Length: 466
Ligand SMILES: Cc1cc2nc3c(=O)[nH]c(=O)nc-3n(C[C@H](O)[C@H](O)[C@H](O)COP(=O)(O)OP(=O)(O)OC[C@H]3O[C@@H](n4cnc5c(N)ncnc54)[C@H](O)[C@@H]3O)c2cc1C
Image (cartoon, rainbow, N blue to C red):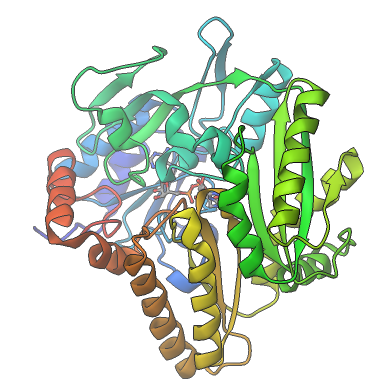
């Protein structure tokens, strides 16, 4: 493949004509455009940032970029955790944040049509105000829905409701060569050939630029109640999860957490967490339409947890209690980040009955390498987030330690038949582990798919596949 072209004065002259001046940046580019939320995965300055407001603008830019072999990196809010929106080859950062209109909430087809720059919190609020539920619930509410679709974001309600992919019905996408595609629509099912729609979801901006999204919405359950269940060890908490999953109704969320992470969250938020002096916890929630139905599920979950060794069960039935638990849970990542100078993250997904074995293994590694490891996650779907913290380690020891420990984590996940990423994606940070995990045949198929969409490799180069 020929090398990418550096953007010169002539390119800038043409590119400027595609959008108004206040959405084109060349000399005064904000430093945030060079990285995402994980600084450890590096920074790279783009040569130009363009904020688009329509599919036609994206199409004009992509046509020019492909004619001149200029790399383009799509970007939403930059809250990603695997370096996905970092412009590794410079070139253009194409930001879709200003495409932020909710176009329609259609109660008859139970769908919402919106632009990719709408923030997750805005989607959830708008759908709630219309009397429905937008089910995907990733932790970072200031992410864009376009970013959520492109990373197939998961979140806390995935146990019951599934992940972002399960809600995408239609997409408008601009291809790397500038064509505008309509994939799917409002239809509720679709068996019409290969699903380019679902290939696009989770492709992390490597196959196309999403400019419009149609998503399924649900009837809103009237009530949700949570249980906070303490255990004497994380291992016994995690071993309880498959038993709770066998109950007649699927819980809305089953999250696990340890005291150390709660302490970090409490310090970060400056707020007391209720009943916090136990080594480990599960948070189990049920949602439904009648109090009696939820209560029967809470009773069954309580009985199961006690049989499995829970030390107590605390009901969170007031808004205040729910808020303090979920605020603390929502702050875990930021709290760990705040507790150290640098960290790296592993976001593997395992069979739910093997999460305990994996967490025990991360502790062994932590002791063996004398490095602080923290974890929390979505116990109900086997997706855990494990953080290795630099703390006092010098740069050289840190670099060596983090590499060796991460390698061990991913080898162990593969041994347990887990997958490299449960929800945060691959970006450029996890490519090596993806190759090790999937093997040559699958990687070759993925590379060939990339080539069909993007023959020159100009769209988000260096991500997922080389
Ligand atoms: C505190 C915190 C908590 C989080 N919790 C969760 C969680 O619970 N679950 C979860 O899944 N993730 C979580 N995340 C990760 C992050 O919020 C998600 O990955 C999110 O989907 C990224 O959205 P974004 O708008 O920030 O995208 P960006 O970071 O800007 O981009 C992400 C990827 O999508 C591509 N992209 C963005 N917009 C477009 C577009 N319009 N067209 C084509 N490609 C595009 C980019 O090129 C990049 O590859 C969390 C992050 C933080 C900081």
